[in-house]
Length: 476
Image 1 (cartoon, one colour):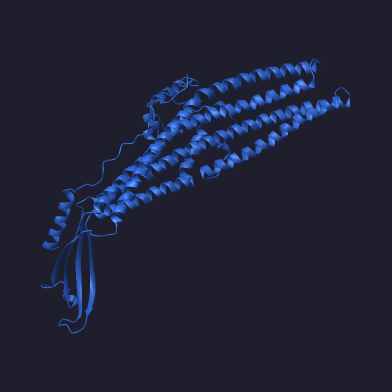
Image 2 (cartoon, rainbow, N blue to C red; image 1 turned 135 degrees about the vertical axis):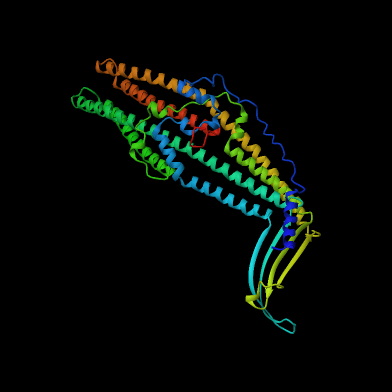
């Protein structure tokens, strides 16, 4: 490599390392206008928070640092989540989008460095010139644009922020997938428990109905009692079929989320304490925790990238300087291509000054500025939406715990009332209509308790998600 080309590259690198005028504006400060603390109803922090010693350490962690393996305590659910993180197609697309954004950044960032090319050619010239004929040439050329006003730097920074945004988008998609699998798993368990209750009720009412039929044949009960008994058994039969369909669709949904067939051994057997024992979360958290949510971070990176694009649009108003140099050798004979006296070199600095573009440059700056303002508004909206989601989940923490406790008390009372009514009917103290009413109340109380338990556990999953719970597989 000859001295002229070395000088060209040295000058380009020196100017690049010495820095350039940055025309990117200062990043505007977001004003989401949210309170510093959550608007919690009374006793939210303590209601339903009977936390064991195993979870006390988890409560002391910031929610985004709580890994999903620490939050979910059911080993079956953990295995399903692990499989989904490996097989789910939507998450796979999110990962590929990150790879694509990384490649786009590398393409854009490559413009910050000199381009070096080499080539060998056979040239033919003709006409009335002295040296017409064939000749061979080999050359090494370099080109570089002096980024004096930061255009290339800002474009590279915008591509980098887009890559960061895609990374956060992947994390947000992963967190949403974890929450969706947990909710589907809990729904599956609740529907399975409701099916079991409906089946047990149907079996009991089938026995009672057979007795009523015998007593009706003997003339001990009226046809009205027989018809009323039939309505209860057919209602239970319909519920058994309905919940069987729900269980089947729940399994299909779980299979789709996992991205692979799910064995029976990984399915819940009912809505027992082990399934519903999802660790609770602390309520006394500052609202600044929202800034760690992946979706909020994603919009922040989009905002930073849009701000960098303004710098690139501003730099387009200023001159651009390109340096091109080449060294090589030319000879009429291929064998003499690198002989003494065949070398040549060239150095071509070029300056381009925008004069008239019909307002395109100013319009491009206006587009970049508008995109930045849109990104700022979306960033603020993401914070506000996150605040509302967390506030809603925290507000339900206390009420859902109270609802579950009330439903449990109602079930205990309904069970006792049903036992008393059944005994009184067998002794002839009450009518069959009263017994049927007690049966319906007891059955409804059982199903309502399952629904209350599902709502409470589902809200905990939602709270974990909206607080930006740990998306990584590890504990922290």
